[in-house]
Amino acid sequence: MTVLHDIHELSRLKGPIALAIGVFDGLHLGHQEVIRDAMDFSQTHGGTAVVLTFDPHPIRFLRPQQAPRLLCSSRHWMALMKRFGISHALVLPFTEEVARTTATVFVERLVQASHPLGYISVGYDWAFGKGREGNVHRLLELGQIHSFGVYGVPSVKVNDEVVSSTLIRESVRAGDLAKTKSLLGRDHSIMGEVIQGKQLGRQLGFPTANIALSELELPPNGVYAVRVRSVADDSIKANGVANLGYRPTVDQAATTPTLEVNLFDFSGNLYGTELEVSFLKKIRDEQKFASLEQLKAQILADVAVARADTHCIMATDLGEET
Image (cartoon, rainbow, N blue to C red; front, side, top):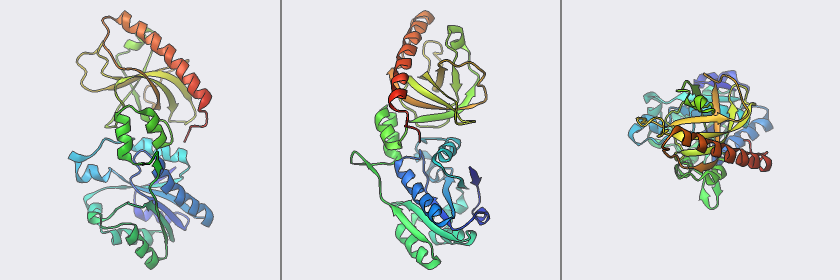
């Protein structure tokens, strides 16, 4: 996927340009409809579909004290976009200058850079520009002036609830993996780099990949059956069991959660690689054991449950990938 960082770079792309604009945190079902609409236009008219988003999230820039935790990191978002079939993304740095830009000027810059701008797809309730003055109706007016099409994609509902990043964050925090999956269109996952740990898992006979966690929305602490994907080639997958939490048996001073994953039937050095860990099913809550022997016995039981769970999930859900 080609990633652009300046509006002027749109001039390098084959027109007509079809833009899908939004924040797209989590790339949920509603986001997918906005992006799919732009992709359909570009395929019909022989142009280029581009997903336009902002980094950091505008709320994290404008009101950092109120900013929610993200559903996925920037790199994770790009990996999801590539998997979805997007070939170009325009990731604009959200700065004070961008925050002060009016809706009209922002669109005019897009028009001037594109050859030509053919289409803009947004969520119907999306707002943009200085003071959030711009909306679908203003886009339609500007589209008539500059000869590009506009579509405000209606809200997507699942079980009579509007799909939104806020709703998904709530379901992740509640540990409702089934609901989260229904809203995302895939299992909830976390992507991060494998970092050096204390290698206690190796000593216990269960080597783990320790995943670095950024400021992400996390499910409740506990032990989970998981599926792991190597981000580098997007093809190597393994099932496993993961512990998310503070490891109270071995590290009573821990203040931040860690994610430790034991990959089934895998051997090799993963340090420095990026893995995507999908949460399939919660096995149990995190707990403190009286001894390492008790912890080892419980891990054996957890592995057996996770192997059975992931086998059943793989057998019934082979077409799940986004």
